[in-house]
Image 1 (cartoon, helix red, strand yellow):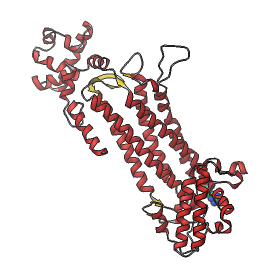
Image 2: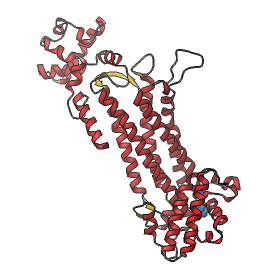
Image 3: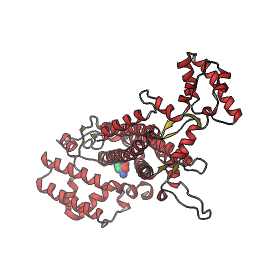
Image 4: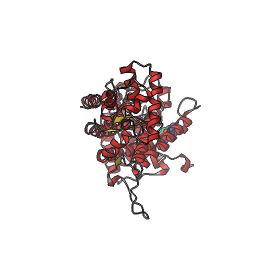
Length: 442
Ligand code: ARG
């Protein structure tokens, strides 16, 4: 029974939140006259001692005391005697764990937001430096159109910006205090829930005591936001794995974020990127696990809900590690500009520019322009050259109206410069987006 029932093995991570919640509760009990000032003072002092014992590694966590709440309270009794028993007046472990866990998850939202901010800064630095470095843009992992390095980096900034917004939204929604819901029905003591809510930095107390002790939406929202963020990181990680391969050579990853092989001396493995790519498995796994624990639970608290913590702890650790590793890699990776530029010009990447030119200059309907361009690509393919290497005569053989002016749009530099539509890849547009983000973060 002890083995299946105890949560102290993992919920000890809530010690700081548990003690903060108890201090707020004790202060409120004194202010409302439920507790004497001297008992409240003894409790306050005792809790601070417990806190310093835990932080100093001098605390004996006992499995027979089940969880962090009972461990702290039991030690408090050793320290201050019977007054410790008054701390649990007008409270239950049900609202206690709800407030502890909410405080912990709220901190994790803040941590995720700063981890994301750091990564965005690293991406902005890359984007600013490489606002006009050309590279191939892909669809289906096939060369599509030339884009800029900065534009590609800024795509991730947008994704991470939405991730940040999700953590901010979740934080705002979870910022209500369940303390004082007691076991499930509220309490007959004249408590002041607004006071404890304010003391713990919540916007207000929760409004329904049943919901307060049975709700784990805040953890599910955190996990959902974490899953989406981890999915974004895994996509970028995958690109870094591909880009750093000998076949691509688009980037050089910093040595300290790669490993060598014990047998093949030439190897530089992108282990950090691979592990970041994998973290989504744990994080989304935790999300599915907690949804599955919560589904079908009748109100209110059931012990099933003790299974919430390990999932969230593991997901949070994984997310923070992935964000930190990604920031380190992005801050110190080097784009291989000549390789990027050569790749940008290959694969008939300016075929769309050619088709657009036929529309704009010769007034062809886009579908016809698409057809003419297809024929010209075929021509170049047969000759084993790229589009700008075709002669004017060869082009005119396909469509008589083509003039030498066409060559101006076949170069990749001109191609990216021409994509001035809002949010497009033109260096000016990229710089404008970098500036907008820098202002937003400032
Ligand atoms: N360790 C429990 C948990 O994590 C604390 C709440 C226990 N409440 C109860 N009525 N047994 O959920």
